[in-house]
Amino acid sequence: MASFVDRVVIHAFGGDGGNGCASIRREKFKPLAGPDGGNGGDGGSVRLVVDPQVTTLLDYHHSPHRVAPKGTQGMGDYRWGANGEDLVLGVPDGTVVKTRDGEVLADLVGVGAEYVVAEGGKGGLGNFKLASAKRKAPGFALLGEPGEEATVVLELKSIADVALVGYPSAGKSSLIAAISAAKPKIADYPFTTLVPNLGVVQAGEYRFTVADVPGLIPGASAGKGLGLEFLRHIERTAVLVHVLDCATLEPGRDPISDLETIEAELEAYSGDLGIEGNRAPLNERPRLVVLNKIDVPEACELAEFVKADLEARGLRVFEISTASHEGLRALTFALGEIVAAARAAEPPREPARIVLRPKAVDDDDVTVVRHDDGPSTYFQVRGTKPERWVRQTDFANDEAVGFLADRLAKLGVEKRLFAAGAVAGAEVVIGEGDSAVVFDWEPTLMAGAELLTGPRGTDLRLEGGERPTRAQKREVYKDRMDAKAEARAELWTEREAGHWTADDDSSEV
Image (cartoon, rainbow, N blue to C red):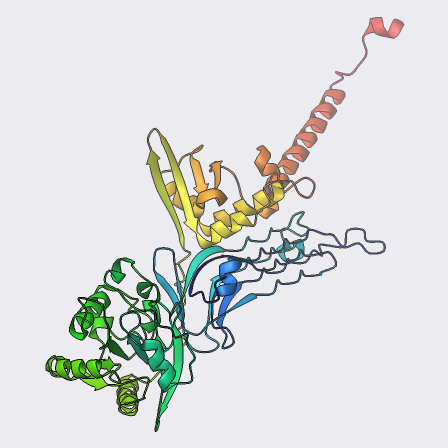
């Protein structure tokens, strides 16, 4: 079973927000004492946090689906729903968060660095929060928003100062075991190293880390072997060390050809230059050459023969033996000087500044776009507020739908629809995808809480009825009173004129 995993795909789901509560408070002698429904709780978010105790992504390889807790529903008597706790996922230092397309979303370097993968949904408002001077007893509440869903790729790029590269069985694992306390697996067959190894080296006043990756072979940039799979672990290093085997018995191989092959594979590898600590492409980093296994007489002669050629290329060359530890002290001090110089050349890290970017007063983030799809035409409304309001609306409740109409009209959506050329009966889409709401627009639909009639939970505007305003009622009342006064005056006039006198025939009966 795999014990080291440095690349995983996780599917994160933020917790859904709890629904608001629609409740009416009841007191003695006061059965309808006003709304008291509480808000729903917010859903928990999925967060990635660098944990020094975590060294691999193995847990997420076995359990890639992670769901944060939901917020609970609000209750009556002004009781708010509980918020869902954030789901904290510990990741190793140096983890890079990417999309499936390879876009870098976050580079988590340093203990405590974090990134929110999926935000939790906001809880819905209860009818206590929705009450106003015009809507004193709302018969509805807002629904909780669903949590975000995100699929991201996690790649572990180790934090190391020095990288050892070379052919399989060139002695990289033996070298890191000789200069540090690391205990990698060492054997006399190729591809003994199956996972990257890290070691800490102390050379006088210099202290640095060394990374050893599985050996490279020709064609590694095309996916052959194991080296390309783990080259991401040396992307942050300050210096590369070419470990060349001077005692190999394979035909067609020598230190010069091995170096050229590895250089070609490093040049073909494209890493993420945008991550922290990645200074330049791998083939442009400072490089040292180590001629290994000089404890073998033939290897020592070959090392002396090729050393001048390598130095003519501008490379510093060290002849070493991991078996006898010959030349290791000079190598470690040279590496320590290069790492110290690289650290000194780095710009000092400044604390992140808090930048406030307030929105403009007239920036409501609402757009209306006309789409001509063949014979049919529809208008799509996009914006943070209208899309959130649609998700929070209970369309089974007429009053909630009327409240949504009020909010959209106040936001200016109706004006934008007019400007885009929408007419009565036009198809309007709010949002995008499965969560979008489609309806036939009726511009004559009046909006305003003062027009609500009927029992709670209903909105007669959706049935085509209109409630007259107070001024209209007063005018109708005055007209009715004037008509009654005129009728009384006309009857009195007829009575005085004797029009109500009974006929002679009728009096004889």
